[in-house]
Image (cartoon, rainbow over all chains, first blue to last red; front, top):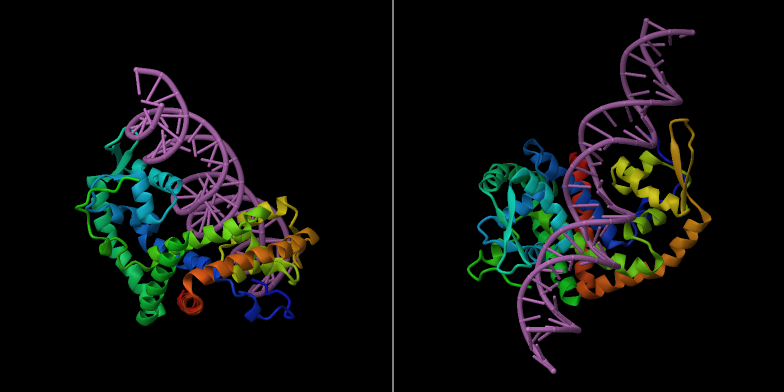
Length: 153
Length: 153
DNA sequence: AATGGAAAAGTGTATATACACAGTTATCGG
DNA sequence: CCGATAACTGTGTATATACACTTTTCCATT
């Protein structure tokens, strides 16, 4: 990998004061770590979180589920597709003929349980690399930021 | 929006101790904020950050640029496509016949300069909602985490 | 009961992300 | 000089993300 010319802008200026740039960069990297840990089961971390969020839940209408996940409704629709194809999740009729509700199948529950140890490994690896104190603070700040930002909107 | 049955798992258990879930959720939401601010120019925040990172730079080989952005090389290739189509960046020959280097066009520079005020508005809105102290701590923790995680890999 | 508005969900389109694989060019050992 | 290897990049495929638009269904008001 060739370095660019040595007379460049100093690195201090490279990631400017952009909060989102840092959020996105870090999310990309950490997502890779979790995905690599989950890879032996052919599961992505987004999928893991969807399965886990459905554990022990009654049938969840798409819209409610999307809101719970903090995800756009149409994003959730697409994200459910591979899970349905794999047989881990099913769409059933809701209380309303407009609604379609998401449920976890027996295979989905089993898959999630098999994935938990791998997820735990990923979480541990992250905690070991970054430090428990920093992880705790980071989680607290992310929760705080999301709450504030959502209240504003 | 119908609420699911009231006998659900309590909300405290819903986002479990998953650091990445929080990172991804918050990133989704904050990305929307920035994208909405940049929408009048038809620019996404990822594109904004690519243009900005090219400002004042010599021609950047794809690989070096990807490393600088903390982005997979092939992701960068795809992300550059709309910018090239729009005429904001160009691919030129590198020092090597293997290399292709990215440069910012005059239109790209102009577009970035027009976008800076919109980006600043987004950053200000985020700071106002979340609080300056929290934003500062969040940035510091994100930088720290990324550095630690990258050193480990 | 008819109807118009609101609610729930899906689709078209475009970008963002990255792994596995393939193609081309440089470099180095003999 | 030649062949093996490494370096640089692109493509195929799959998922993740969300906006604009459409379709279907419910419901309230007349």
